[in-house]
Image (cartoon, rainbow, N blue to C red; front, side):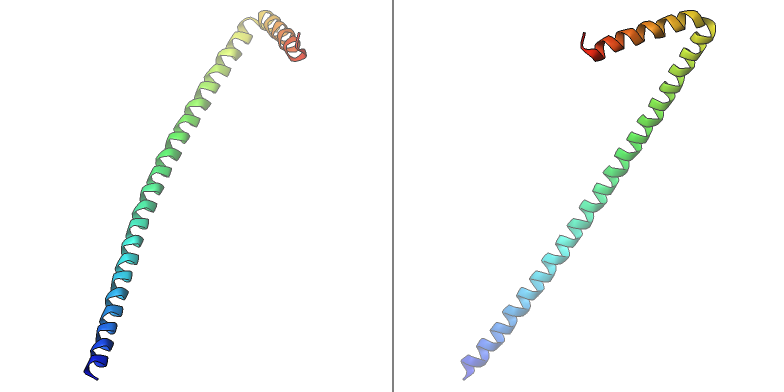
Length: 98
């Protein structure tokens, strides 16, 4: 009978140890997942900031280019009209495949 009682204690001990090990594994997995999430969010923020900077830069360059074109048209309207006409003919012929 002592053997049966000892087996029950051993089984309970093994079960408790297994449960504790499982809880520790889950806790560690949670910590790792939280760290990965933090790193991903940080990288996403960096990428978003970089993309926003590039958009701002592209808008500024576009605005600057439009300003230069506007100044040229103001200074030489006939020449600008001729350039636009020739560009239209070239684009039209390219679109038709000729």
